Image (tube, rainbow, N blue to C red; front, side, top):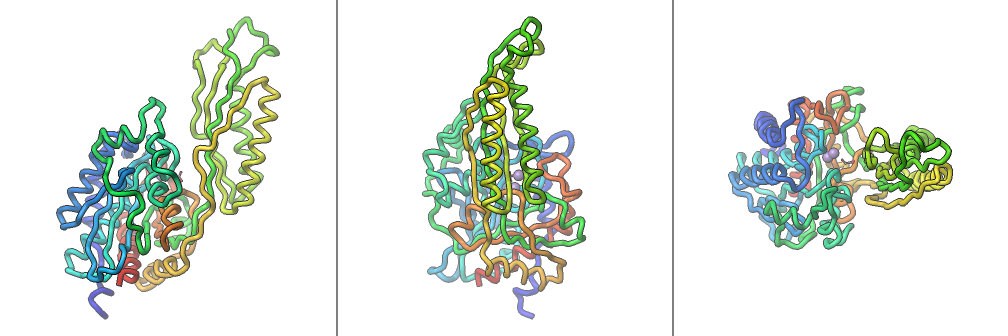
Length: 412
Ligand code: GLV
Ligand code: MN
Ligand code: MN
């Protein structure tokens, strides 16, 4: 067996770094709250940068704040084999979503540094800006801008609920970089991630070989009715925006159930105004998140929701405004790179199964510009986007070893 085949990552170092990173924005319940482009996001990025410099990696930051740590290759004609994920979290997020993919990529580079192994292609670890899409939309913003899915000016102008823009916040935290978005493109892209669902745990499988990702539509729905007194205003005279919103919540759920087992429908955000006990709410903003692995089914789900909104508006005498804030089509990863993930898992003697991701990932955008594949590892109870999100150190280590060998095979 050659030196490369016996190479293994340092699972303890990977776990230790994950726990160090999880202190930045740690919540009482053991999760992490580290929204994109906040001071905590800056702290996490700075820590990643410090770790990367310790092993001699060169850092660059692009205009949307994506960070790349590069290890040179021996063949000047080759482009980088890249791996990465994100450091931003949900408002009540966990320690592993995104953070694992970034630190697994770093651990691969640390391992090669320890072993003094040179690859033909350069290797890069990437931190993508605002994957979660919680504070700023669109979701998967940095990787989308990098892959040309969104114009840079549009994403820099996106604003949070307080009116602060991505461009202003990037400058404020010192991550408005100089390097042009999307240059140079990688030769291949890999991403390790916790599954965020129950399949691997339920089937006692260590590695998910991810063949693709469900498509997604996000709509922001603004409903306008009329503020009115809760006492004197007869029921028949009301234009209750929150009542209309409640019907939308039911409709989103019903539409997803009509597209079982692959349809998903969620209303995760709702804001009623004026939000006062004795006022009929005159304005509501809510979101709809629709997903399906089949593009036509997803189109049908969205069309059904739009038709239901018209009916609800008529039935409640309210006005609806629907705005699409994110979309991506179902994606299929590159068969050759998926096969190198599968081969790596098999060579390491790890149980594995092929699966489609219900969650969005930066790999979706990268897959449009480079051969891409993903590695999943189990998470406890399939729970994610939750402070209790948990994963076993040995699974994280196994996934990182798969990442290492898939990258080595590709980089040569
Ligand atoms: C990303 O976290 C998503 O919403 O799938
Ligand atoms: Mn993620
Ligand atoms: Mn997430």
